[in-house]
Length: 179
Image (tube, rainbow, N blue to C red; front, side, top):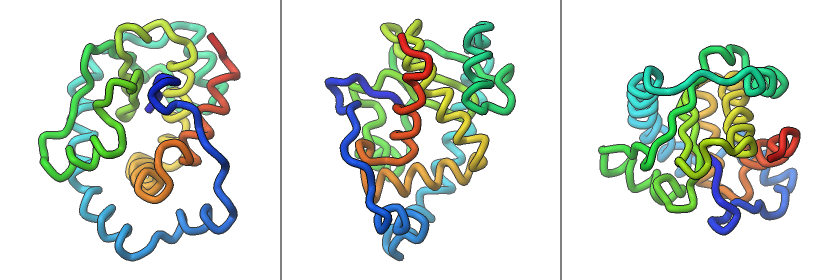
C-alpha cells in the first residue's frame, strides 16, 4: 500500500535484530489474531482480485521492464485499475482491522490485491506509486499469496506501516524508477 507523504508515507527507523526476529515468531496473542484474520482476508483478497482483473489495463512496455527488474514473475498478468474508492471488506472484524491498518484512508493512493494494482485517479500516472506496488507484487511472488498476506498482517500488527520491512523495501526500491 502506498501512502501520500502527508499521510504517513515517510518511514521511521529500521527495526532492531530482535524486532526482526520477533516478526518471524510473533507472540501467541498475535498469532491467534492473524490465524483468525487469514481465512477472511484471503477470501476477500481473492474475490476483489478476481472482480478487478478484467477491469484493469495491462502494464505499458516501460512498466513491464520495471516489473521484471523488481522480480515480478508474471508481469504480463498484472493489471492497473484506477478507482475513486478502493474496495473494503464487508466482514465487520476484517473491515475494522483493515481500517486500523490504514486501508480506506484518504492518505492511501495505491494498493495491491494479488496481481491488481489499484490507484486513485490523481496517482494513475505516478511511476513512483506504480513502482511501489510492483515491489509488493514481487514480494507476493517471493512469499506466495498466503505468505505475503500473513507477513504483511503480522508487520502491521507488530510494528505498523511506518516500520514495516515490506513497506521499507517498497519505498527503498520505488526510487529506482522515480517520477
